[in-house]
Each structure stands twice: as C-alpha cells, then as structure tokens.
Image (cartoon, rainbow, N blue to C red; front, side, top):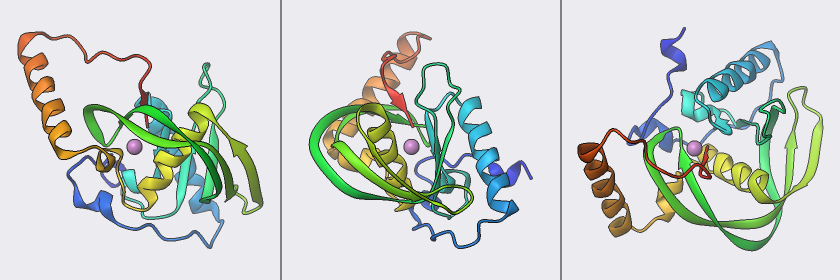
Length: 179
Ligand code: NI
C-alpha cells in the first residue's frame, strides 16, 4: 500500500500524464483525499495533486493557512476566469531542491467540486491562487520548471550542487511555496 503511495519525483515520466476527470464520488475518493492531505502535511507542502502520488485523477488538496489547519480539497478543478500577472517564487515536492520564479495569474476564479460532488465556485488571489494554478498544472502533466528557461535551470542545478559541496546548509528561501 505504501509503495503505491510513493511521491513521484522529476524526471519520472509518470508526472507527465494527463489526469482523468473524477466521475464517482465514492469512499475510495474520500480515502485518497485523506491520504493526499496526510502526505502533504508530512512533507510540509502547501499543496499536492493526485498524480504526484501516482493517481491520475483530477483532484488536488491544499492548505495555505499559517496554522496548517485549513485543509481544502478540490475535485475536477478548472480556472474559469483569470486576471493580472504576478511573479511567484515556487518549489515542488516532486522537484526537489529547485526553487524558481515563475509567472502566474494574479486572480483566478475557480470552478470545482468538493469531495461529495457538489459544485464550488470561488475567487482566489495571492498564495491560494498561485497554489491552485500550480496544482492544476500537475493534473495536466505540467511542472513549474517547464516555465523556466533551460539555461536558467542548469544554472540553478549547478548552484545547488555547489552549495551541497560547500556546506550542509539548507537552500535558502523561507518564503518559497513548496507545492
Ligand atoms: Ni508541485
């Protein structure tokens, strides 16, 4: 069971698959959402998408609260309306160590279903908006590093390798959202 729930990591090709819409809002889905939240909290992430644990279904979980006590589950999420642009400093549980700035929409209108299948419509901005966009990308097989030019990625990798060699210090950036 645990093996089934492994957290996939780049460059695992399974992260590139397109996830399927959820049709059955059954017990299995509820269990999966709970498992996803557990893994997200254990990994200190603020979001997790089902394909990251090798489940190709369109479900994401997140918690952007400071106290880490406001779990959210969105099934079949999609962006209805987007406005503005914002630079976002991101990391990803499936892409260890890399942190990079990517451009996201500033405000979004989210259309989704909750774990029981009822419709959700909400507006989001700031961290919540960014996190939702990052997680929906996972459902489409997209990673945040896809937005980063290759040259820059290589530079980042070199820097990380160098840091590792020089010291045992953790990469800096406490304000980075790991999703
Ligand atoms: Ni991610």
